[in-house]
Length: 118
Image (cartoon, rainbow, N blue to C red):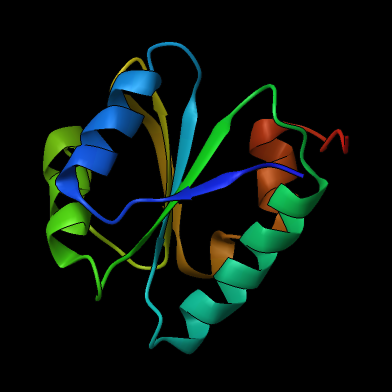
């Protein structure tokens, strides 16, 4: 099972962003008050439960509770904020992002590969 880091402070985000130079980072921007986000969050959790820990680091930010962090992610990556939203970050830059109903287990398999439980 992959470890998911919750980004609660700007320092958490800056540290995760720096880490993307060594390993890609997949950030999930989650609204805890949105049913669409709840469905995407479930898909995300199912994928990360099956995923190994080698290929990608995983992080989540709750966009309402940690609004400054969510805004900093959008600003530093130059990606328009959406929620739910996933953003793949490599070398401090957004490689791709997707939002809403497109965030599914199959989408993660397409973009990140078949999970390797272990």
